[in-house]
Structure formats: structure tokens, C-alpha cells
Length: 154
Image (tube, rainbow, N blue to C red; front, side):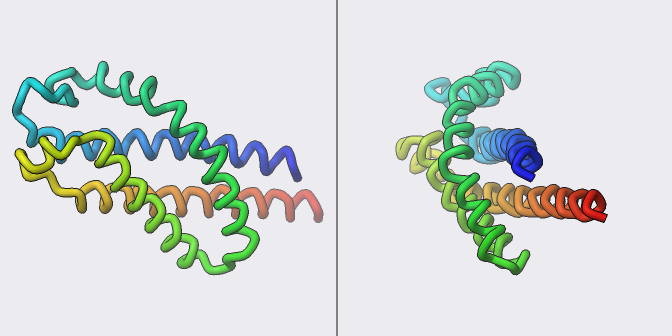
């Protein structure tokens, strides 16, 4: 059982990093494209591949550390104590949305937010949707693992 749980969390870690980086790129595509100055090097000015590589190299280790230190224990506690799938979805959406606000503040300084009228709610909604996707994928992976364990037991 422990090996299966470790494998599930490793797969979920890869999925978490993929979902988070996708949310970063979508946020940059929606809000970053409003910034039309050469002072900001985003997806438009820097080029798509270089921007994605800088996200992976610049934020990848933070995402991995966040997943290992914070999200795995939260996920384990949710599976242990929260029986309702809808409650887990709500918790993940709120958590990811709050993280989206933090990411927005990291990506765009107040000069760009005020000067180009960037909207923080866009980031919150994008990351809340990412939280919804993560919760659904996590549920499917855990249910599949439980079904496999039941089949092995019989």
C-alpha cells in the first residue's frame, strides 16, 4: 500500500506542476498581454519557449517544494478526514485561488497593475479552476488506486 501511495503522490506531483505552469501561462496570456512596454519581459516580449523555460527553471523548484511540504500533507488530511468530494473541491479551489493571488503579486508589480489596469480576480479565477482540475484528477487517481487494491484483495 505504501508504494502505491508514494507512486500516486509522485504522479500527482507531476500533474500539479503541469497544472500550475499552465495556469501561469494562461494568466500571462490574459493579463501580461495588456502590458505594452519594453520594461516588462513577458510571454509577448520574451518569446513563448524562453518564457516557459524561465517559468520551469524559475518557479519549478518552488512548486516542487510547495507540493512536497504543503500539498501532500493537506491532501492526505483531506482524504483522511473530509469524506465529501464537493468539500475537497471547495478547499482546493479556495487554496489554489489564494495561491493565484500570491502568484499575481509576484509576477506583476504595482506599477504595471495600476498603469495597465490589470485585474487580480483573473488570477484568482484561473488558479481556482486549476484547483478544480487538480481535485478532479486527484479523486480519479485515488479512486482507481482503491479499485485496484480491492481487486487484488479478492
